[in-house]
Length: 119
Length: 114
Image (cartoon, rainbow over all chains, first blue to last red; front, side, top):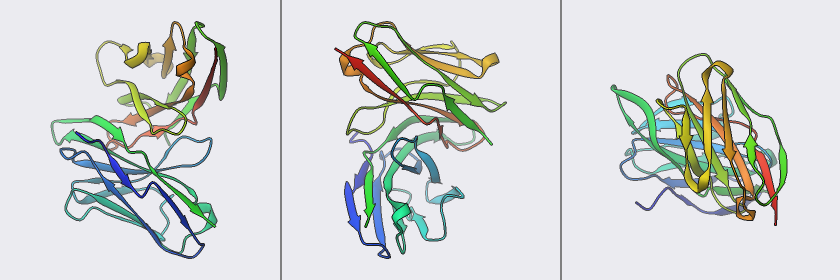
């Protein structure tokens, strides 16, 4: 178990550029989540996948944000036309749900995050 | 909408003092409850969780939490803190019909003086 891996660790980009982050969850986990954390705040939910299906998107996820999990394994989060307000730590997490029988999120584990700075 | 409230933004204690961090949530249904810790420069680590059963939950590093359903609370405790407990602590709630999404409190920064 290598945990949840996120790349890159840090990203500095100019306003207006597009950025993409990658998350590799724990291999046996079927759920993958993206959160955003700004300084002094708790993480805020952005979106989550169950296998390859994106099941929920927060209102925080504007149309400049898109997330994919094409094969139900790793996921990418893309931000188009970045703005200074997008500067934050983007966290990925994964968990295991026994679908249909037990809705509890087992093994909920966070990655180290990708820190985005938009200049 | 669900929300999680952590009463203290910053707590300062001396080593060996007892710790209690408050957490209240607003949701009337079945919940799963979590406490995470974030040491400086590190990622969120799970301290303990409550899914069901005994409302007194023991976690890592000597931490425990008590779920009081009638008070919608899940307070974190440790009888004797150490300097190494200096970190930020987050309470989080998952409503069981919401697919594993966690709602976090704003966090409590704990500073332990040696």
